[in-house]
Length: 145
Image (cartoon, rainbow, N blue to C red; front, side):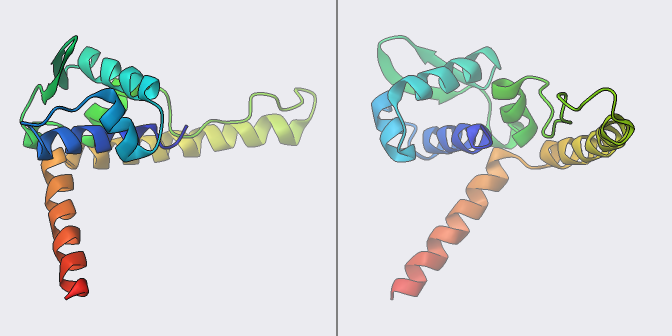
């Protein structure tokens, strides 16, 4: 559940890094170590979210926007919609004063966390992710020397 955003960004980064390669759902699934149906589900959400363009039967998906114009919040919303990051327990005993009120308190804190996270996610672009990726890659290569 929590890895959907990571997997989504993985797909977007893979497409940005290899724009001229055949990227089937099988190949993407291999990279994430999951199944192709899950990849197709995420890619469908990315298409509907306006972040990906693809033609059925043609394994060359492309970003619908430049990496600097795709934010983590865009990716999150594409696959999760308006689902909050954190959820109060809705199964608390309604006759328990602590249970009911603690959930109301947590809901307020969770809303604050949601707003803070969304603000920060709006600031981080796919271009930023790719830049960090290249920095990590260079660091790994230097360590091997």
